[in-house]
Structure formats: C-alpha cells, structure tokens
Length: 370
Image (cartoon, rainbow, N blue to C red; front, side, top):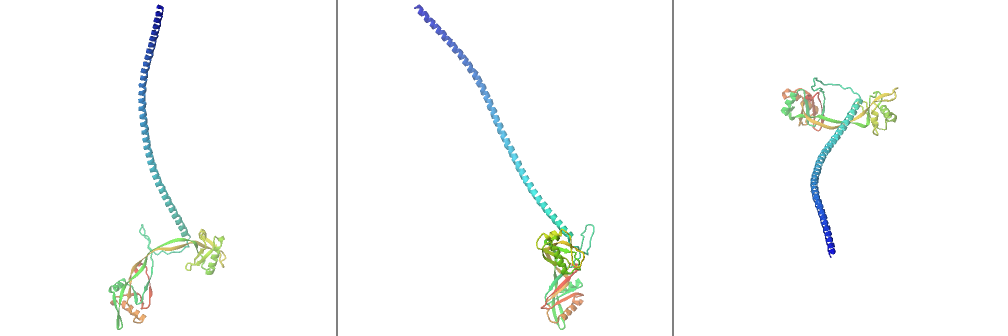
C-alpha cells in the first residue's frame, strides 16, 4: 500500500510538474504571443501611418494630376484659340493673296493691252498733222486747239434766218421780239426768236482691234483701183505669204488704203506681226513694200449734246407767203440792214417760204463766234 501510494504521489508530482511546465510553456507562449501582438500593433500603427501618408500623397498626386489636366486643358484652349486666330489670319492672308493675284492679273492684262495698243499705234499708217494751237510753260494748262464745228440746222417753211456781223445788233433785234415789215401798201408782222443750236459737248469712243481685218497702207497712188484690189487680195490670200481666204476687200477712197477681211480669225494677227510686206504689181519692175496694220474699230459709247444760243443769228417765224421768194427776201434783207429798224450789217441771209424746208450750215472759228 505504501508503495502504491508512493507511486501515486510520484505520478501526481510528475503530472503537476508536467502541468507546471505546460503552464510555463503556455505562459511563455502567451508572453511571446503578447509580445508579437504588441509588435504587430506597433507595426499596424506604423502601417496605418504609412497608409495615411500614402493616402495624403495619393490625394496630392490626384490633385496634381487634376491641376495638370486643368492646365493642359487651359493650354489646349489657348492653343486652339491661337490656332483659330492663325487660321483666320491665314484665311485673310489667302484672300489678300487672291486679291493681289487678281490685281496683278488685271494689271498684267492692262499692261498687255497697253503693249498691244502701243504696238498698234506704232504700226498705224503715218499721217501728217498740223498743230494750230497755243502752248504755255511752267506747268500751266498746256494745249489749246482751234476746232471748227459744223452744225446743220433745219429751217421750216415760213421762216427766215439772218446772221448779223455785230452781236449787239442781233441782241437788239431779239429784244424787240415783234417786227413790222412794210411791203408796198401792206404790212406784215413777224416774230424774232433766239436760234438754239445743238452742239457736241462730250463724246467717248471705245476702240478695239478687229480680229479678222487688216489695214494695208503706203500703197503707190499710180496703181489703178481694180488692179490694186486684185493684186492685194491675191497676195494676202496665199498661205506662203502668211495669208488666208479673203472674205471681202475694200478700197478707202479718201486715203487710198485697203481694208481686207479674212474668213477666219488668226490670219490678221499673224500678218500684223510683220509690218511691211512685199507685193508685186503689174507695170512695176520691183515688188512694192506695203504696210500692214491692225484694223481698229471704234464704237461711240457715250455722247453728250447741249444747246447753245447763237450770238449773231436770229430766227424769224410767222412769215406768210404773199409774194415772189426773191423779191420778198430782198425786202426782208433791206429792212434789217437799216439801223432805224434796229438792224445792221447782214453777214448771211436765208428765207424759206411756206411749203418748203431747208437746212442752214453753221461754222465758227471758236465757240464765241457761233
């Protein structure tokens, strides 16, 4: 029994020791676990701190990214505005360039036209001109020409037209208005009226070069007209002479020049590139050089006519047909020659009886003498 009890005590002590060791082990494990938990808590706090720092950095990074985006958008907007401004400026420059090109083209066209006109003018038939005007120096108005207008005035029947030598006489006759003419035992009354003449004030003529015609000049005057036209037409109808089919040919009687019209365009322009052409005529041993020029056509595009009252002429109307025309004209002329009747020296006289009509022609050295 004592041995059993001793064994039991030994087992309990062993278990106790074992338990104590287990408790110690558990305690050590707990302490280690507690230490680990403390360490983990420290690490956790550190991680949380790092997380906060990372979060702050991320927020700052996000804010920086947003700011960068805003700045980029602002820069993009500025760039787009600058691009738009550049495009507008570029469009304006393109339009200005187009306008400059058009202006240059117009100037070039005018230059070519002026060169063409200059070429035409230099190749035109020569003509002598007599200058009959005055010139002034020091930049004052330069040239004054004496023009002699010719005006045709229709006169109806029962009218007379008298031109006095003195303007004062014509003015006095007009002031009297009604004039009583003594014809033997009878008397007639006629009316004096101012003579209104229509004069050309301004004329604008537009010229152009005819594409199918040429003017042939400097032709010998001794050649008969029929031979002249035949030989000229024959010469300029041949292709070897740079000519072509002739549509018509005309001799200008006043100048002796010839106008040739071709059937197609291009021939005239080709011929005028050479100023002188050698043409053979019968009876002349050597060929004759004739001048070929462009044919200029003129068209009146504007004309202005104004009324001018004659200072020396008076129109009389209401004249009855009561006697012989010549006798009556003499009576009228004698009446208006007398100063006692308000008249004076008569320069020209015309009487048209009833039932007839006439035309009076007026010429003057200058407009003050009309």
